[in-house]
Length: 264
View 1 (tube, rainbow, N blue to C red):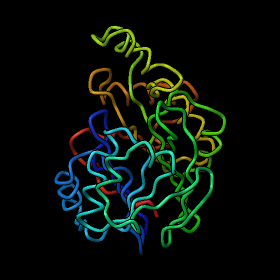
View 2 (cartoon, one colour):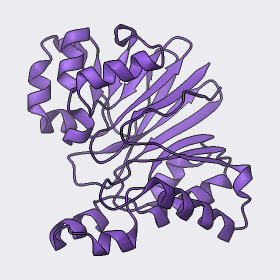
View 3 (spheres, one colour):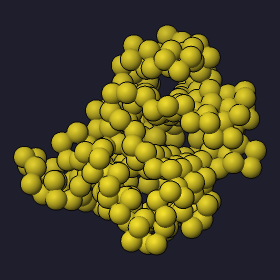
């Protein structure tokens, strides 16, 4: 058994859930502890059964309740050393040092029956990463907050059957938004976020390596719409002569969990 659910995904808060036969993992905790506990309850998961929280990077929309959840429910937290050093307030909340776990980017490790490979992504954070998850022969991946797509990221995402990939903004909406010029430059810059267009190109390529299901995540509240992100990606698939019915595309919403995907 391998299940996945996006609890929250967007520029206001992010938290994902991965479940195998013996393991329950949260990826990021960027909403309030109360909201994350309730979202887990909605899919019949008890917060006390969470085995670990993985951290992609230290921005508040990914770690808002990290320390609180770890301390209150005695949950180990895994992050790389640079990320730990960049979020001292969250670290200080965790009184049990045994729950402060470190991993090295590009070095695999295991949490029970799930093998995890963290890989580097370009974003304006200390040492941000995406994750590959391996369960038996199944591979799924999570990659958000990507300033630009690189060959290394593509190589890490290849052969994934399932992916949650950032589709943060639409180029035209961003250009016309009320954001100051400096913020627009940050979002669209090499260490910002991934556009709908690039998400579509990435998914079109990954389809050729075995991708069967993709969730578009981390959509901007101001510079995107779920329908537009979906439409842009599907049009890119069609432009690459890929039948849209051969791959399952959906969008993770900001305030509501996705269905629980049964992956394997």
